[in-house]
Image (cartoon, rainbow, N blue to C red; front, side):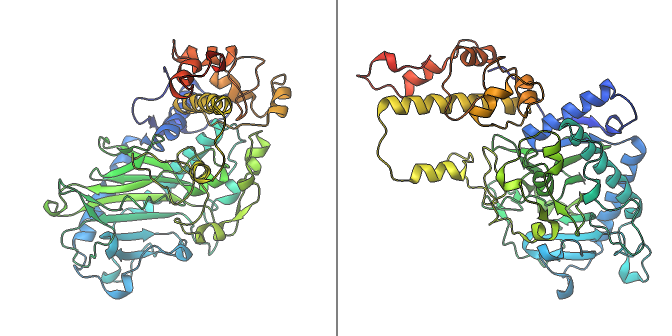
Length: 474
C-alpha cells in the first residue's frame, strides 16, 4: 500500500514555526505539516534551534554534568522522593529517585531562587536563560499544532501561565535538569531497572509506559537513550542522531485531553548503554509546558472548529483533578493501539484495544458464516482506511451513517476535511462499522495498493470450503 508517511522522524526548524501576520508562508505550511505528521506517526519530532540558542543548550548540559558530578554519592533522606502527582507544580531544587537511578534539579520561576544564597544552594548555570527559550519554543510548537487542527490563533492561552508571570505567581511549567545512571550515585535501589543481554539498562520495565502530563515536552540530552513508541507499537530511538542545535519534542497527556484525543501522547522510556563506563551518567534538559493549576481542560476549541468530540471529552476536567490521576488506572487513551493508561501488550508485542479484547472474551452464540463474512468485510474496510489515514497523519473521526448521508452534500460538515484529505470518493458516505465495501470504496483502496481487493481477503479468511462463492463481498 502506497502512503505519504515520513520515512524517519520529522525535522523542523524552529524559525519556520514562528507565526507572522497575514497569510501563512509556504515554509510555515510545510513545517507545520512535517511536524504534525511526525507526531502522528512517531509521537515525536526533532526541532532545530538557531545557532546561538543551540550553544546555550549545550552549555547548560555541560554545567549539568559538573553539577551532578559534585553531588554527594549518598543523597540525604530529605531529597529522596518519587514523582508525586499532588506535588506536580511544587517541585523545585534538587531531588533524587533511587528507584530509577535518577537525580533531578527542577527550576521553576517564582519558586526556585534565581540567585543562590549559599554554597549549598549552587545550581546548574544558565537555567534562567534556558527556561524562557524553551518556553517560547513550546508555545510556537503548540500554535503550529493548533493551526494544523484549524483552531483559532493561540487557543490554549487561557490554560497557560501569564507571560511574564504576575506578582507572586509560580510557574506551572518546569525546566528539569536530569542525570541518570551516574556511577558515583550509590543511593540507587534498581526496582524499575531491567538489564538486557548486551548490558544496557532500561529505566522502565515493559509493564510501565510513562507518558508526561504536559502539553508539550522538549528534551535535549548529551547522550542517546530516549525511546518513544510509534503508532505501530515499535520502540524507536529518537535522540540517536541529534545535531548540536537539535532537540526532541513530544506531546503529553494534557494536550491529548485538550484536543479531545486528536493528538496522542508519547509513551517513552530511557535505555542507557554501558552505564558503568560513563563517568557522568546521561544528562538532559527537559522543559515541560504545563497547564496552570486553576483552570480546566476542555474541548470547546475543538468543537468550535467543527471537530467531532467523543463522550469522554465532553465535560471539562479541572487541571488539579487531571494531575491527581494515576497513570496505571485512568482510561483516557482511545487510540487504535492505545486504550488506557495500562497500555496492555499482546504476546506478539503489538498493543490491542481493551474493548476488542472484552468483546472476544464475551460468551455468545457462533455467528452464521454469512454474518461472519459481512462483519469481517466491515472490519477489514475500516482497518484499511484507518491504516491509510495513519500513514498520512490524519486523525479519523466517524459520524453516524444517517448524519454522514447529509454531510456528503455539505462543504462545512465535521467529516468534510477528513474526506477531502484522505481522498474519499465523492458522494459516498464515510466508513462506518456497519458499512459494506462497494465498488467506489474498493476502488479507493486499490488506488493505494493496486490489485488488492476485499474479496480476496474474505475468500482466504472466512469463506467455508463448502460455502457458495456468492457470499463473497464485491
